[in-house]
Image (cartoon, rainbow, N blue to C red; front, side):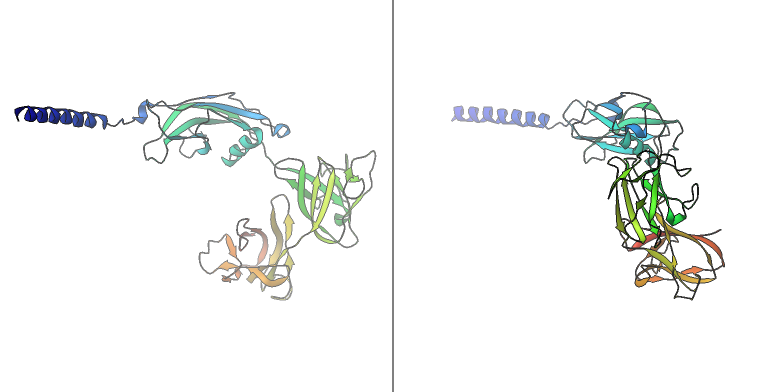
Length: 358
């Protein structure tokens, strides 16, 4: 019996020791973010940005995440700022396991434009690595800061269509442009071709006819030698024109929707005469300058009341129109006004507008 009791005490002691050991094993490692910082280097501090090299590398960053002394699930991002305190940074997420991040000229220039930096002007931009525990509220850690000297460029570029629709007048404010949003050589825009005035040329500038492009057969354009034949639109009316300067091709598509003003404030018979808006290819809005009287109006599609835009009855903000549950747009003082109208790309039941007295 005594032996049994002694064995029981021994086993109990071992159990107590095991419990004590388990408690020690439960001790947690707590990271102090202030003591762990990543490192961050750049391939250049003066990225060369040019429309001629959109696919070329602008800058590459080498990334080393902070060492917390244990495996940690973290997320990394690069922050860009024009201020030392990074109060309103532009942030770009990067892959969790990435050890580097390269930006081509197009993407990096877009980041800078997204920061509202002036184009054609040298500006200092700060960059740093931000590291955050994934799904954690722990304060992020930040790497060293790199200063970059950048000169962003305006990304859009234009070509011009001169022709019978504007009486072949060059230079002239009536010469319409086609827009390439990314300077990739593909230009698009809306041209209104009146009946019997379908011929035109494509111009590199709107100053003169030097280097003009003409027809090289159906759907093709060429500079040729001397003065190539005119290009002809297939039909009169509002036409979506696409010119691919890389492939030297041109295509046409009738515009499905167009917009106009109508009401008691617009010219002509009240609520019975449309004042057409012209598509501004450069700013990608429908617009016109028109004499308005005190009264009201709406914007409608295709001279028809099937779809019209007015002031929202709920949530009016002075800058947005809605195509349902809306009120007329008021004009309190007669005068000449510049009106713009731009559909919301994500929701065509809404549109931005401006009504500015000149």
